[in-house]
Image 1 (tube, rainbow, N blue to C red):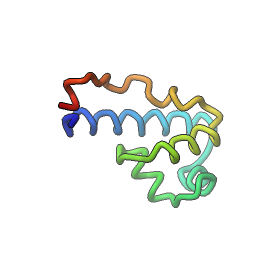
Image 2 (image 1 turned 135 degrees about the vertical axis):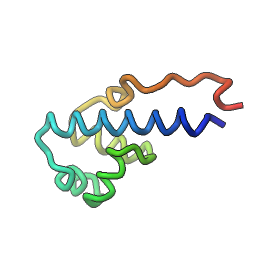
Image 3 (image 1 turned 30 degrees about the vertical axis):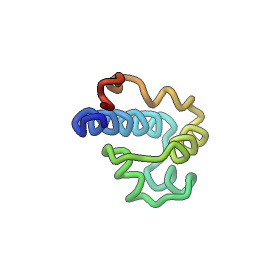
Length: 84
């Protein structure tokens, strides 16, 4: 399985990217959360690097009108050995 350190870094950067696009869209944590069906505290956790589901990521992508792959910018790259 991938190292916890690498996964934690991945989710932290993912959350930072979500935050960047949320702010570009002039939305608060609460507004984005309500739009995707989660509360403000859940959005706060996501932006601070807690794991999220693909479904949640796709909802965020849709609301922010940003292709989902944009949220993966600058995240660490994984290889087969990371999951051995």
